[in-house]
Amino acid sequence: MVTEDLQRMVIAIDGTAGSGKSSTSRGVATRLGLRYLDSGAMYRAMTWQMLLDGVDVDDSEAVAARAETVRLESGTDPRDPSIRLSAADVSEQIRFAETTKAVSAVSAVPRVRQLLVDQQRAIIGIGGIVIEGRDIGTVVAPDAELKIYLVADPSARAARRSAELSDGQRQDVSTVQTDLISRDTHDSSRATSPLRAADDAVVIDSTDLALDAVITTIVGLVKDRLDE
Ligand code: DC
Image (cartoon, rainbow, N blue to C red; front, side, top):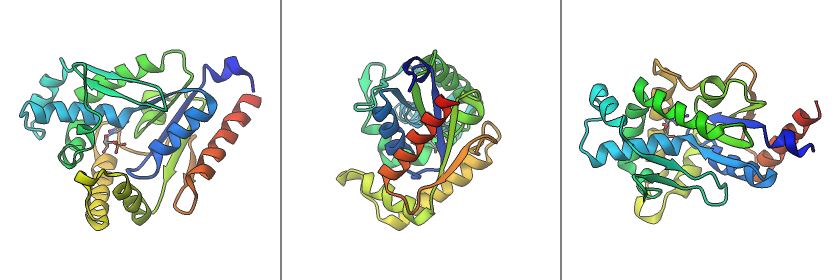
């Protein structure tokens, strides 16, 4: 593998909630020695800031105004990803059920997307990164060398998400499934950057695949691209 080419590569991994994007993206980045960015964590942190400040998340003008001065920092180590708001670690708060419930409304606000897409592009820089989200292959990095679109059956996705939640945040699988279907609908039907596969994305269905198998498939695709 040509290391310099790999260090400039951008690997975009998009897909629905609970399709295994985070574990897959972190695994691919770790195996290839690349940086990792969770763009969903940035939308979640923005949402947490709105909740902290009592901003009505359905008031898009208020959300857009508050978003202007939010100070967000995203760490890109795939072994220890971090997210900070005004220097405070909010990695737990961004997974709270109240944050999850409000994130689709906040991420539908065009100004929020513009601000975060700018930050994501700055972090991508010259490349050498795996970045996961909903609009990475379509909007954030349309020139990414490899685009993956991960899908899985809703029941498999709900079971995975439920298992990921910490004890205090645990919900039953059917509640998680209803919530993620509602988020998929919201994320796919919003006017700005709706969730969809890029035309040149490789679609991988992870329903019946172990995490390691998905990671190995993507690492194989990266090697193919580098050999081309
Ligand atoms: O990947 P996640 O479930 O942590 O993402 C949380 C929400 O953030 C998701 O419901 C939609 C939004 N999101 C987005 O609009 N664009 C992205 N690139 C990533 C996430």
